[in-house]
Image (cartoon, rainbow over all chains, first blue to last red; front, side, top):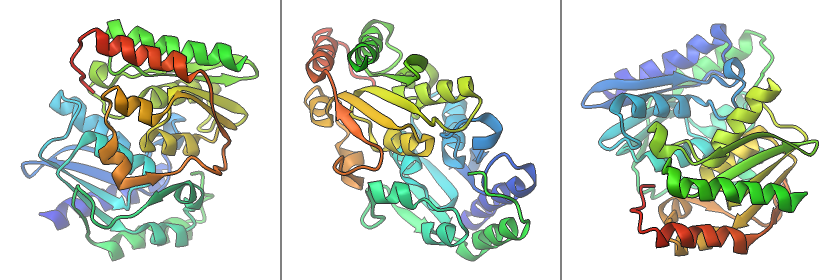
Length: 155
Length: 155
């Protein structure tokens, strides 16, 4: 199941290559084996610097659940969450985080978050919400396709 | 001017004591001496764990500017931003951050962010976006009023 859900998160990332809502990032939230919220990066589409895929997905899932928390849910992120998104995930309290591409993969693909990582130190070791990497190679393909598209990075 | 804008952020925090949209937190975004966006915590009102005052204010200000960044803006926060909000502020790129109550003050008032702070280390020293504390005593009064109201902390 985790492969299928991560494939969906990566597919959402890939769709943004042509939709140009923002960068090639996707996220899916799952409860009891069903997707209850998903999102892609909509920063450019909505003029909203907070509209990362994870935040969009969290907001949709909490609307669906009519709750401000995501108890018993899992979040699948096509790329390792940035500090903003990881903070949001902690506030939302899902039971597990899955990610595919790493932040280093994102950096190599010219998504340079180094300013933020310099300011907010993060370590993914020993987290209270378990975190697991799944399908990194599939997610990196999307970064490659994005860059091969010759699209200016807007975000 | 900075006193006036922080007073407004603190007033927004205070209004939440009776409105119960979420915790007693407020934020204001200023450009060229004018407020272009403001927000209070709306986590409970909107079932949105990402709707901290800073995120709400950033989203409104970027809508107003029709841009996904806050170049040349200042953000006034009634309390030191949590990691999620600090991440959002860095993505939005205002030129300066002001805050009133500290995270320790929030913790003493039973807003316990220790889980997040344990997971995402933050240091407010030597930040690339300058940060300055203003009116901490005024902001702490609001926490006191919140707790004296005997309201269960919902967030």
